[in-house]
Picture 1 (tube, helix red, strand yellow):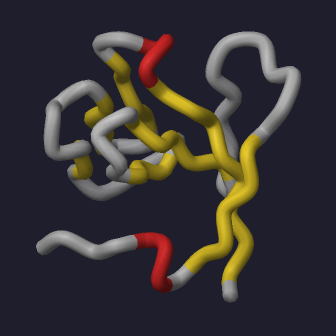
Picture 2 (cartoon, one colour; picture 1 turned 180 degrees about the horizontal axis):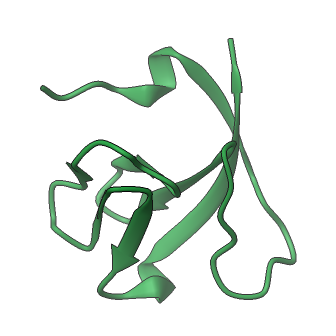
Length: 74
């Protein structure tokens, strides 16, 4: 099931982060446009396969193509 997280959260870029931060309110936006939680406990992946997660962790094939975002409920 595909859920567009933009309909639930407002996202703001995280500036000045070294590497890719993680946390309950941190999400990764891939260059393909999909958003995945940085601590995804359910199986999740972007459509191009660069970002994939589950069981509380996320892996990225090309971190330079990922933008960290902070998400707040609408």
